[in-house]
Length: 161
Image 1 (spheres, rainbow, N blue to C red):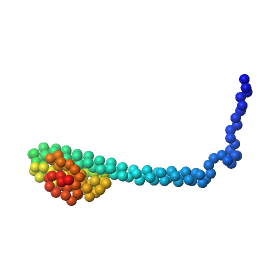
Image 2: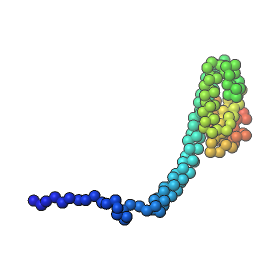
Image 3: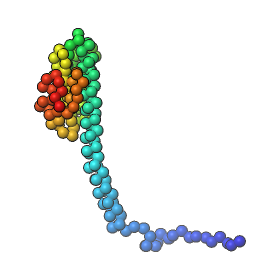
Image 4: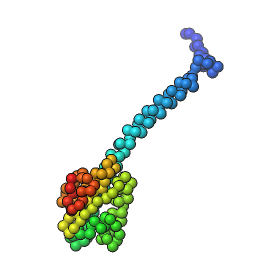
């Protein structure tokens, strides 16, 4: 059997061990550049996620329009007023609180506007997108859905893509 050799730990007084200040600064600079690139790439992803939330909110408003219809003697008339000013006077049942919650979600999703039109026979509702505020995602009571220019989205009760 051979005797076990004892290994000494490296000495802290050896100047060749470790990184120099310049090497550390270069590494930090590279990490900073990579982090900036990731942050920039995430911005477009964040806006697309906002658009998905906006589309979901518009779908919820379409469903609430059906609830409004049954709560308003089988008429959509006044649903656009309920969306513009969700109070208990304008919205039957507990719909005012639900519409307010969806409108707050639209604001958090960076939607810059809500378009709505309604008459006794139907309605159209749409919200501007976060990626392009001149575009509106709209849905109507007949089931049509799509993107439209903000000015023409809900001029009538039909979504006009």
